[in-house]
Image 1 (cartoon, helix red, strand yellow):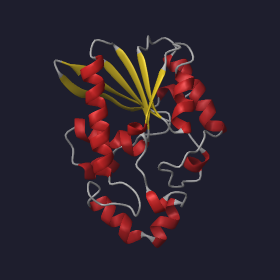
Image 2 (cartoon, helix red, strand yellow; image 1 turned 90 degrees about the vertical axis):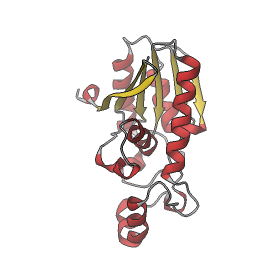
Image 3 (cartoon, helix red, strand yellow; image 1 turned 135 degrees about the horizontal axis):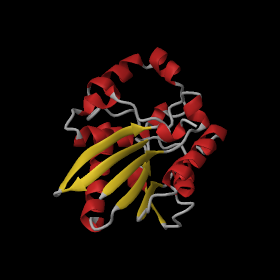
Image 4 (cartoon, one colour; image 1 turned 120 degrees about the vertical axis):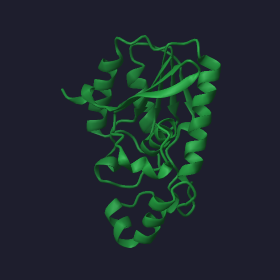
Length: 202
């Protein structure tokens, strides 16, 4: 079984470098363009099942991917981005200037540091791992599964399967509309591909 982890396409908040979290933002024009490239990329893959975060930007991305396969899209809140609480809607530059100590604490201990009124990255990682393990347990006979989620949600999951400390989440990129691939074989899950963006180079 291969599990394609797709980060949603670009939103205006991504372009403006705003903290997005669970704020329900739609794709911008470039995001829609990216979604069409994803649609083309997946057009020749026999997709068995699609799971998606229920946030609009993920669902729009899922619907584009699903254009040719016409599968039911299974929505789940477990695939949402990390709830970033009071930081949502603020630009990263503002956060660096005004909440530098909080950002430092978060980078040093993302597993346990809670953004005010938000989640810890450890909580996000736990729900993502549980989701993947449920998929593997329930659908291991399928060949191709697509999961559309978000930057930190995917990063935390990749850390786990690469056996990296959660503090290493920022050492690799998960770009908008990128594809990372997990493979399940011999009762183990491994990272086969990370942050593939070749389909966007058109």
